[in-house]
Length: 448
Image 1 (tube, helix red, strand yellow):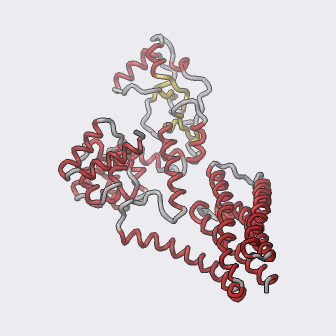
Image 2 (cartoon, helix red, strand yellow):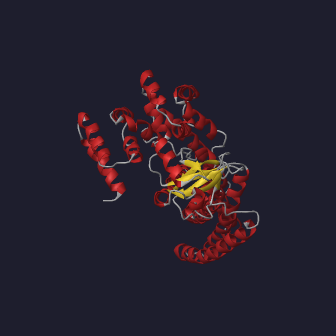
Image 3 (tube, helix red, strand yellow):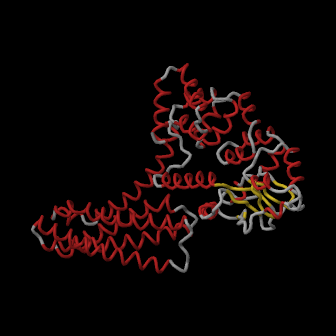
């Protein structure tokens, strides 16, 4: 059974159980190794009242971790249902990483209360993280790492490890007195080394560090090409900030993917499956309104040729083909562009070459499908003129789709707008308008 099938099975089993048994079943799954992220997904699959009850029944040590793994709206729905005492107890257990994750989605009064309740050490780490922007690696780096002076002996290092009760780490970061990064030592190598050996002599050579100012996308790419499971993060002065690992890369990449997927319909990655009806209706209604405006623009274009459509009914039959071919061609180019931009592959130096390449592809596909569709239309309606008209419209629309599929995301990016959010709507409008105008405009000239 795959992970997703297993999760679906868990949800179904809990949903079918009596209310008194549901928490017991969920806790049994946790004892069997169910991860907090999977627990959060299970809670999301239940209406808010049931979700809150299931969360309250979790082991106390999992409360914060499950809420942090949950989507923003899901987390907020649980927090909103807590009593004042429950909320204070929950906020007091926050660590710096959880508070950073929560800060963007909770009201300021709750965040301020959390800041007054969390431990002093966690507050200091939270303040350090806030020195960086949301899209900078330094904000999300794990700051709780094991560090030791780089020039001490192995014997001294072991004494310090015992004194500070460090759990056995995978590796240890070496720093100088100014907390600047000087290397990394495997914990296994430390245990095997001679007592008199210096830590700096055990350090791995050519350790690659990540600058805390890197964007999340750049950091993920670096981790993807790294031979290690984690990488140290340093600031411009080489001071050790913390580390990031493959788990960070996977979760961040998933969030980026879900954000872009949801953005295409005007929704947010943190949206709740069981969000309140009125709130969801308002949020989705805005997007429907935007779509209505673009649809009206396409309809106005059709309305300009009302007389010719009335006289040649075949035009109304064939119009969806013109729009559909342009739409899919444009979507292919737009998807390619959004992926390339997410990977920082689009630069001033290659935009023109990419544009020419896409127009070339559009020209070939346009001519090929124009011949096929034009021939079919001519045979269907016994009209060579009609076949030639739709063939011309197909060529024009597919080339236009390629052109605007490249230009629209570039322009939106320049305007600091997410191409994944607005790109598809704008492109669909452009291909509809261009396709209808080319098809109906040509028909009005040659068929009347």
